[in-house]
Image 1 (tube, rainbow, N blue to C red):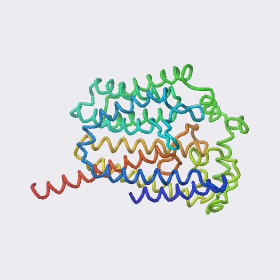
Image 2: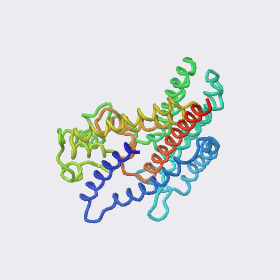
Image 3: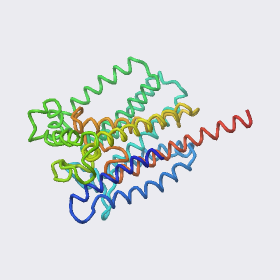
Image 4: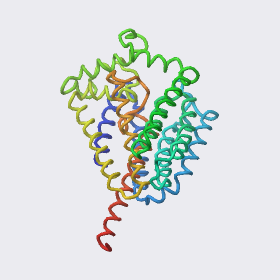
Length: 358
C-alpha cells in the first residue's frame, strides 16, 4: 500500500497541474480524490475478506460483469466513440474495468478446479470461452485496449500454468485469425489509423500521429529535472490531448523530468516484484493465480501506456494504473491490491499455523 500511495501522490500532483491549466474551477482533481476515498475504503474491506470468499464469489462476479457489458449497449453513454460507461448524475462507471477484475477471479477459479491437470485441452477451451465472451462484448463498444488486457491476462496465466506447446501455437494462430476478422468487421477507422500511424509515424505528424508526436516532445522537454509542476508547455497550453488519461506519463516526464519518470517506473517494478513474491509463497492455486492475474493486468497496462506515450507502441487508450484520471480504474485497482493483501495475510496465517501445530 505504501508503493500505491507513492503512485497516488504522482497522480494527484499531475492531475492538479492539468486542472489548473483548464481554468479556475477544478474538474478532474476533486473527482479523482472522491474515487480514491471510495477505493481506499474498498481496499480495506477487500483486504479483510478471506481468500475463500473470492473463490466462492468468482462465478457470480463474472456473470455480473457479463450482464453489465450487455446492458451498457442499451443504457450506457457514448464518450469519444465508445459506448462503455454507465452514467448516474455526475458519477460514471466503466464496466470494462469491472470485467478485468471479474476475469482475474474467474481465471483463478478455473485453475483451482483443474487439480493441476493443465495439460488437458478442456482447460484451454473452457477458459478461452470465458475470456472470449467478455472480449467480444468489449470490442463491440469498441474498446480495443481493454480487450487486449483481458486477452493478455488469459494468455499469461495459460503460459504460467504449463499448457502444452502445441496449444500455445494453436492459440497464436486463432489470435491472428481473430485479429483479421476484427480488423475487417469490428475495428473503427480511428483504431486502424492508430496502427497505421504507429507503423509510419512521420507521415502523420499533423494527423493521426499528432498526439504521439506531442507526447514525445513533452517527455524530451522535461530533460533531467523537469520544468516544474504547472510549467509544462505541452500539457498546460493544450498541445497534449487527453493529458489526464492516455498521456499522463508525458505530463510527468515534462514537469518532473527523468527523475519523476524513474521513480514512477521503479515503484511499478517493485510493486510487481512484491506481488510475484506473494504469488510464489502462496500454497493455494486460486490465490496464487489470482495474484498473477493482477500482475499481468498491471504489467500490460503500464507497458502499453508508457509505450504509447513514447511512440514505441500503438495508442490503445489504456490508463496508467493508479496514476491516470479515471474513477472506475482507480477503485478496481485498489480492490485488486486489497485482494492481494488478503492472499498475503492468508499465507502468513497458514505459515503461523504450520509453525504452531507442525
